[in-house]
Image 1 (tube, one colour):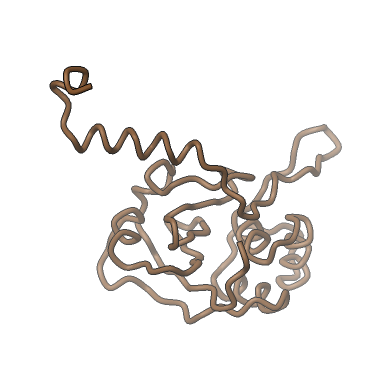
Image 2 (cartoon, one colour; image 1 turned 180 degrees about the vertical axis):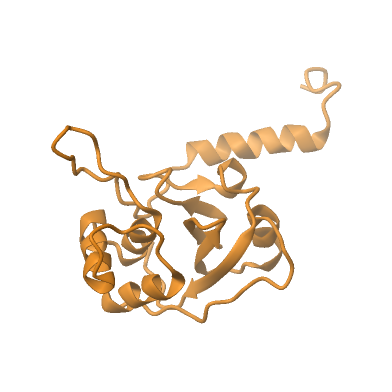
Length: 174
């Protein structure tokens, strides 16, 4: 065993083992699937990040969340949602959210989670994109990875800057 690990650092070996174990465990958290609505030409409609994050927190399907955003904003399409719109729709579904906070220093998502997040569920805005972060096990989901939770180190958003975030106070039972 020691001969096969020659030339490798202990950090590399442990990192590969933990990455393998993370892939083996199955996440049992709610994550809505991609949108199943097509236009008249047969192309799939876009799954927007704001309604997706709200649907994951409230444990509802994406279309219900999307229609709630449409009625709240009064617009035909849901694009470019703000934090107050997300919080209003969450409140409509009975989910309490905390105060919107901005980071004191400009940090990327991976470093900010490692230092500042505790065992809560957070909705985080990174470069005008909403992601849902579980601080308990540092996993993330959004409309790009619809239907699955990924570890933050494997996310496409880990090197993006955090603009603002707010915690979910009435924690869903994942």
